[in-house]
Image 1 (cartoon, rainbow, N blue to C red):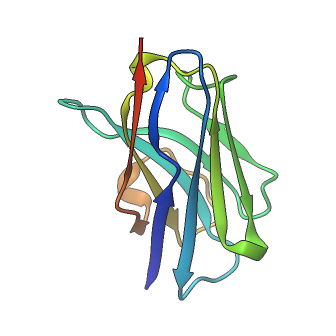
Image 2 (image 1 turned 90 degrees about the vertical axis):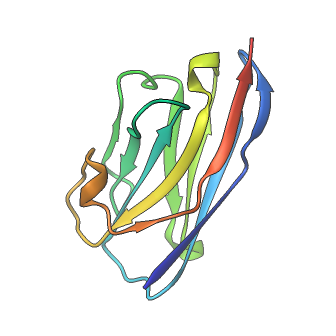
Length: 124
């Protein structure tokens, strides 16, 4: 089993920035893809970004492209989501996820492990 713990959420004004972190522990192994999803009140969970093991491949939802940056530090078993130019529409619970595969995916059911989520609130 792999445990994922997010941190870094909070309240920020529109136009501001936040950096989320996700620390992995347990039976981690090399090669796994990591991603971020989010769920706003009354909406379905949606894909935000994903990153390959090496960090050489990344993929973003159109809604965050150019504003968010996903990265990872494998030595620390940690991934990050730098969120810039935040908008009220970015308000959601953000979830870290990992999948036992090298294939990037935007589909939540393809991910094997999930964090508990961290709240991000953007005020206008």
